[in-house]
Every structure is written in C-alpha cells, then in structure tokens.
Amino acid sequence: MNEPAFRRARSAEAKQARQDAILEAARTLGRRHGIRDVTLTDIATAVDMHKSALLRYFETREQIFLELTAEGWRQWSSDLRGDLRRRERATPAEIAAVLAGTLATRPLFCDLLAQAPLNLERNVSMESVRSFKLTTLGEVELIGAELTRLLHLTEQQILDTISTATGMAGALWQMATPGARLRELYTSDPRLGHAIVEVEPRLARILTALLTGLGAPSAATA
Image 1 (cartoon, rainbow, N blue to C red):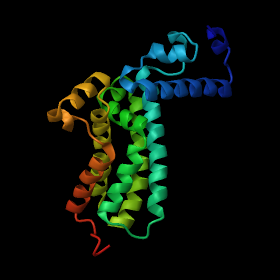
Image 2 (image 1 turned 135 degrees about the vertical axis):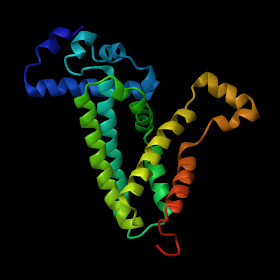
Image 3 (image 1 turned 60 degrees about the horizontal axis):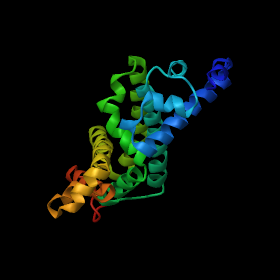
Image 4 (image 1 turned 120 degrees about the vertical axis):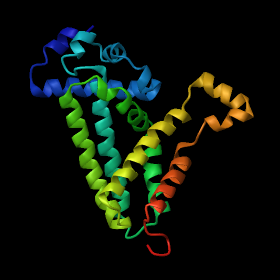
C-alpha cells in the first residue's frame, strides 16, 4: 500500500494529481462495470489507497461520480455545439439526430445521467450539488443559444428539449444494458425482444417528435 506517499502530498499540484488519479480510476471502473456497481473501496484499491485516505480528497463516492457527470456535461456540450455551429440551418429531425448521436456515443455519460438524480446528488454536500447544478445550467445556456439560432426555441422549450434528451439518454442506456442474465432472457423469447433497445435511433425518434411538436421550423420552412 502506498498510503504514506499520498499523505505526503502537500502542494496544490500534488493534491490535484491525487484527485485526477481518483477520478481516472472511477472513470475506468465505471466504464468497465457500470456506475451502480462501483464502490468507494473499489476506487481506493485502484489507486492503491486506503478508503479513509481517499476521503481526504472527495467527501463521498457520489461526489466522485458527480464530478465525472459535470465533466461529461462540459465535454458533451462542447462537441454538440461544435456540430451545431457548423450549420446555417437545420430541421427538427436533423437536430434530434445530432443530440441523439452525441449522447449515444458517450455510454459512461449516459450511465451517469441516469444515476445523478437517483443517488449521486443525494449523498453529497449542498455545495457540491449547487456547483454541479450551476455547471449544467451554464452548459444548457450555451447549447440553448445554438438551438435558438437554428430552431428559434424559447427558453422553456430549450429546457424541455435538453432535459428530455439527457433524461431519456440515461433511461434508454439502462434499458440497453440489462446485464448478461437479463439479456439472455430477453433474447431467448421473441415476446421479450422489445425489452432491449437501441439508444440512438429511439432517442432520435423521441426528440424529433418533441421538436416537431414544439413548432420548430420544418424542412420546408427552415
């Protein structure tokens, strides 16, 4: 065990390096096993620390994953806006496809999106929740500027669109990854085949219907 080495991390740079190592370990374990099944002990073991030493850097397991969720929001927002900025015009179906595609290619983020309201926000300090919510709000505002430019959405419509996109991405990802035993059951009986979904096409259909229903410009008027 290298716990003494971690105790000697006195400088801000050294402490940041420890935090980065913890986040990277949680990121790797989350991708491999799913967020729900990763414990604080698992993360501590991965960075060769005792659990009590790890808690000097993060208040709880949930705070670690909430940090990764905020990171996911920033990265998704950046890539999404990069795509949208290259477009002079777009239809609801085209915007829906971009939203769905950029989310479906981020399985860890989709998993985190499902877990955040269920438990990640519920076992951290109020300051951690506030910081996380302000991060997501800032990214929503940046995305919203592009959606307003392309589809002339109102502020409420932007909130509805992004919350639907991220909420459904999280839920659909859970349905798409039921685990080996459930997947075997679902695939063994044709009547249960609907239980396994493909995230991107279903999410694109849902968002297309939403944006069309909101009155976003159609292909004929865009």
